[in-house]
Image (cartoon, rainbow, N blue to C red; front, side, top):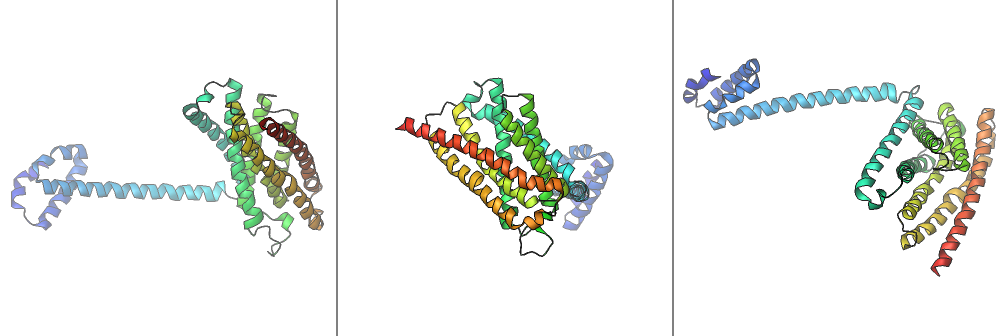
Length: 331
């Protein structure tokens, strides 16, 4: 590029500057841009700025093309493999387990920075703190998706002429159930690992029933409507976890703790008591469809809501008892 120095003074037209820039870029590609940039001091400032602007456009165009290429490859990977019908159950379960691990690490990171009481907790309490963060995120996710499929989507609508409701499914509904299976497997593993610190036999029974019924519905496509109906009951989980957080943080006598107890009472009444009565009613209306399922599927549809409803009533009695005790202390 130094050879161009004695020509610069003779170039006044814009066309000649373009030719010079083009030649400089070509020369720079051969010498390497580092060598090319060292000799820019020999050119007028306006010419240098134009040269740098062209170089910037060259790299921006190359980067955008590379990003677009990677994006297209990622879309093909997701469409042809991750969300392809034969692979959805497996990729979604693995994705759910991976998401649980990420949520655990993020909860640990955020809590150590923003919650002073976290550092004073025992090792088991910190593990449970982070584990409840996972269950809260899963509860929010699965509640939203369950409400979408049961109420807003027409996938399970009786007005839709697409076969029996009991046998309907979609790649998205199967994927969502797979993520939930991944969560239940992760949480069940944590319970067994630290048993009984994270929960007793009632939690093991609850998770075992849940993972069995959700996995069956995911793999066979049968009874997904009632699986999502039951999963709506996870809406109470964030409130339960918040109550544990408040108790662990020493805020048991605060007004937030009292308000949380009242909120849990009404949420549990709606999502884990009244909802199950509606599920029994809907199963009765579609019993002719349920009876066409595989024997194990029929057992799950009739049996799982009954067992969970019984457990929910027992826990609800404890919630009422605890709320009365809290209100009595306030008075």
